Length: 489
Ligand code: GBH
Image 1 (cartoon, rainbow, N blue to C red):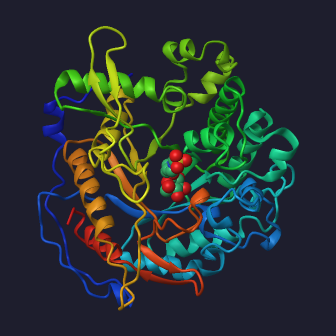
Image 2 (tube, rainbow, N blue to C red):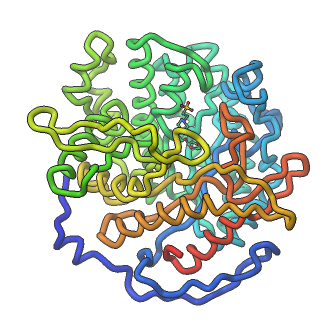
Image 3 (cartoon, rainbow, N blue to C red):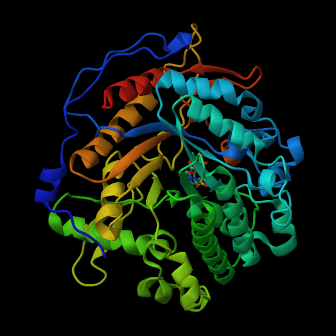
């Protein structure tokens, strides 16, 4: 049942209590050594709010042929000339597979209390299914131990797009129901092995992106351009993989294991914050996310979604929709930009999405539009439309045209501007009682940015790819002050 927060509820739950801040210098990192002293402000987050960074396996690990890892569709795709900017690939990336201890040290220097990483499916099941690779989880075992030894809570994503190539070759990847089945087996195996230490598992990351860009537009692996009906079926199989994995993780995980998803919902922002436009944005939230988030959070495709798809609608059974709608413990949302500004209209459907004016501001990439209020409305909509009570911002950040200055530091004031304004809106949400429990900044390090290769740098640590040296950018120092103060600074 959707729940509705009233102003009174907000008032009763608002406030993070007194700001208990002690300026501590936790860092061993030279460039972060200067401790900026946050002052107590009304811009604080609730006590116990988790602060971390996020990464994904193929974007940072490298070591693609180590310890029996199988190939993924991104290994194959990135090695096809012309698919990735500068024909870059993830063969080495940040070499995090070998440098993870130092990278956890960067997190410790920030004062981070959590970390979101993803597990490479083909490390664990080189053929996607069948026999697990005995060494497949060793790296993640060691990483998790290192995190916990440093007081950092691990959050694991099971699928951040590196599908085992064998599944693409043998069954057509997400085009087949065999892939969701295999994904669930892998998910259960990982949960059995790691849930003694990892309490939060995300099933799949950004359904929209890997399905639409990978199987529809052909710009991400596996590079297909399926016709609408087949694309709809691939979408449905990704949802089914999620639902089956939720059940497998529950069955195999220790008591207390929590499972959720990480989706880049299209955040519907009311163009004007008045009741009629807010109501319109809620209707829009359900309908404009009907292919993914709505289906998983409600266990159904909306009537409007099926009507619009017509003959190209996915084929599904009632049992499958029940699996897809398996209850979740929490929901993660990746928010970089506003999805749509929405206004109320008379009659059905009650909303209109307003096209973005050409002058709408953006960061380095065109798609990275600057709409900080997306970080307010995204979680508020999750809570009010679907009653979600445990919300994480699983990604937020930006790439910038980062160039080290003479002293070696990147003075990325544009990234700080972006983060400060988005965090300000997130703080507004928590102060009003929207149950956001943590925030993961994308990303810890500059890394392999998919089809954009290494050109777009999203890290708060600069990576010199020739030497693998990591240097905190000014934004790392900013984020450290945010974490230390548990407040927007
Ligand atoms: C996330 O995607 C990913 O989860 C993460 O791996 C990635 O590194 C990060 O954000 C930064 O991009 O140029 O028209 O093809 C964010 C959503 C959707 C943003 C696809 C880039 C490409 C649009 N992404 N989009 S287009």
